[in-house]
Length: 149
Length: 96
Image (cartoon, rainbow over all chains, first blue to last red; front, side, top):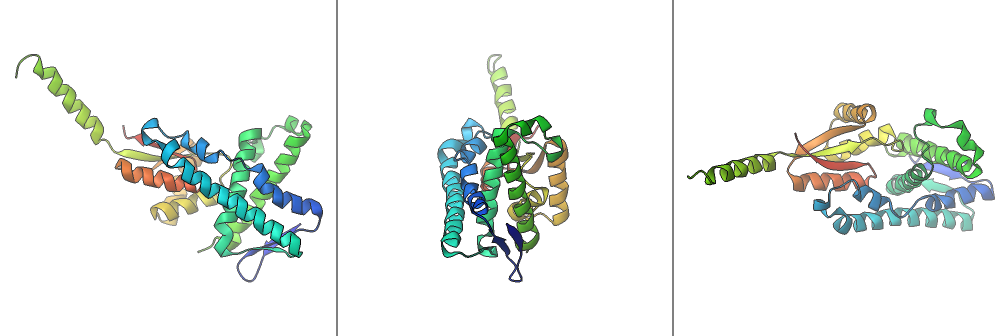
């Protein structure tokens, strides 16, 4: 997969193999639906965060995941590249972030320099680690080239 | 005022002082959110300058948490809501 900035101020993802497409479609699969609940767990009971705020956030996060998957599927069906422009960058960044937060919650990668080499004995953890790095790299490019004021 | 009333008055005074303490919006460190993104969110939510946002972001990164705003509970909850919407780990605390 090639990823790079465009003259229009966006980021272009060019999937070259079926595996590349599956990686992008998998962004939603790596996410979990309980991020809003876990954030609510940081608040005290008086706030009633679980009842009032978390459902709205859950819906917002769900929309991010669905939008990204739809855009990837549409591009795949039409044989097009994927363009992330300023109008949709928050959605993409958010979906990638959800995936990384869920992977971190599951595998506890921690900061990159702290990763335990023994973790790589688990093939699913190894694959998740490289997906996490790819998501992080795309996020960095979005910040650098698209999320500029 | 009789001898029985006096402690009750003190209790009321202490309670009032406690409730007067402002609420703090606290951002917690996590290994996922990119440093540049955290600064960006702080600028967007609180209107901080780039320098102030980066200073607070570094405080979160180095100390594990940082108070980024303090004031009344209603507004503090609104800010935490916006930080959660940006997927930052944030909570409310009471000023000491």
